[in-house]
Length: 258
Image (cartoon, rainbow, N blue to C red; front, side, top):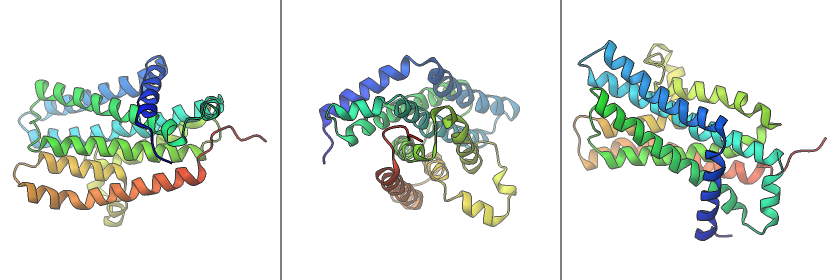
């Protein structure tokens, strides 16, 4: 079964319209993304003026953390709600392919997450000492690939959520752990034992932050960037495969009846 470009585009627009009509989704995904993404690095820049390297670390960590909220968390909430409302089941009954239905939601959140990341970055370039990435394309790839992988994992995670009311609560530990691993809460991870750091470095959010930091590195070359980003890119590829396999195996299209 192949993905229809036309159906995928239609479902992406449909998912976007539903999202922007949901005030709860706007307040969490959009409000928290912009508030934390701009506010925390801005505050750190004022507390430690003249330290662009510190602002870069804070920005990358916080951006990765809120990206988890806007992709993994949001798609978990959205798909469980549509599953419980039997909307997903009705969409399948129209003859739409499963990949198009889920792909439209993933594409919508990837586009929105990338757009929000751009707004946060531009705002910080204007308001703080945050420099522009030395390799903007690599930075963009980190955000887009990270958002896509996190959406895939969130889609698979819905199988573990028994009902929509629990989706936000159950996804919150993932948000907190991802923020800790990516540096969103500051250099706390550096104070942890080595084995703890090694475990957190395996998380997809840590891989996204690592690629983004390579893009911000003060010096380097194209070959050097590719070498530095190879390992975290491989981690993201592995997590993408895990998300796809888990979705194919356990994703539920309707609420489980007792």
